[in-house]
Length: 136
Image (cartoon, rainbow, N blue to C red; front, side, top):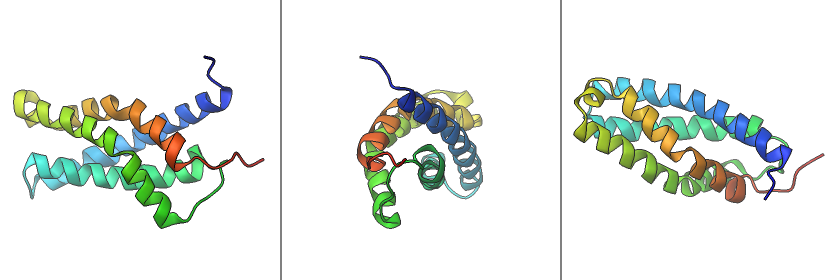
């Protein structure tokens, strides 16, 4: 099965937006860990990153696709990416629980979880959230 140029372009852009999401996630997780435990901080960081990545995927990665109402698309994005979240948070939590270095530097667990959920999040976002016809 050949991968289209459009799919490769979208995946590249999705990865770039994911890089920004990683920075948001790591920063918010670090800040939140000053006020909450690392598990709660990881949830807060993920939500902040998901909000950021939805916005930039809407206006850049999938800008050529037909638009849907903002709130509906945002909720669909959170719902579709729930599987990716489970992979992310499972990886994040396992590293926080079992690797002292990740407890000292949660950014390591954020990075591992983000990479683990990337393919799932891209596939579900492309198929179910930003699924409209390609605009010319």
